[in-house]
Length: 300
Image 1: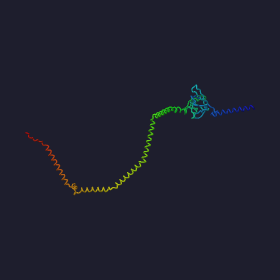
Image 2: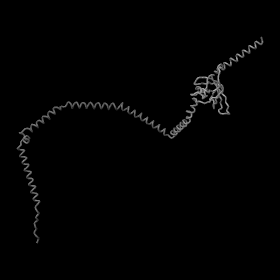
Image 3: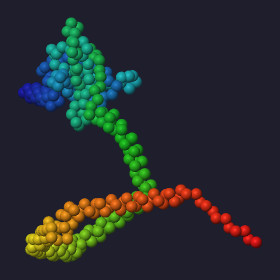
Image 4: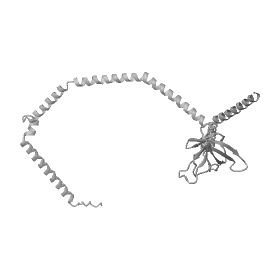
């Protein structure tokens, strides 16, 4: 009976150890009941890769990282061993890529299959695959944005230094004072405009309204004047003049209508013209005669 109890305790211990081993591997994601194949790859750096990290093919998990060993006396220094599900054939040209796993900085292994796979000579278990490192998001930030951050900081420092110089020389301060003065002048102008619109402008508008009213009254008086009577009197005067000219009894009528008087006047003008011509001819003949000097008697 004593030995039977010891056997029971030993069997129970073995069972607990088995359960602990299987549970620990289960928590790590290792399926101990599924056979796997092991492959290796060499890397210059590990990027935080740890054991039990996932292994992917086209985003599908096919295994785990079995070991991460390093030897800094050689290059590359890191040797990574992966276990993938048995039955997965890795054709020639497959690469073991170290990639970023998520945004928290973890790393994983991705097996990149070639487009033109050589199915005739696949890799065998224990072979070493060609390796590569795919830069992640933080690597891109470090090589892209962070690389230019120094130049941006230098330019920012130069800008701050130039602003400090401007402030020290007083030009920026003077410009700000000018802006403040312009703002104050605008405020004063605005007050003057408001005073003009509220106080002076209504009186001007009233004066204009009264002037327009007076002008309308004058226009009404002009319209109401006896223009028609004035025109009638003017017409009567013109008719009287026309009647006086047309009458033969009046002086103007006789002068305008007596043809004999016109002929006598015309004849008298012609005779006067002939007399003037005769006078001109006599004057010309006198000027044409030689000048005769009279001899003066000699003095004794």
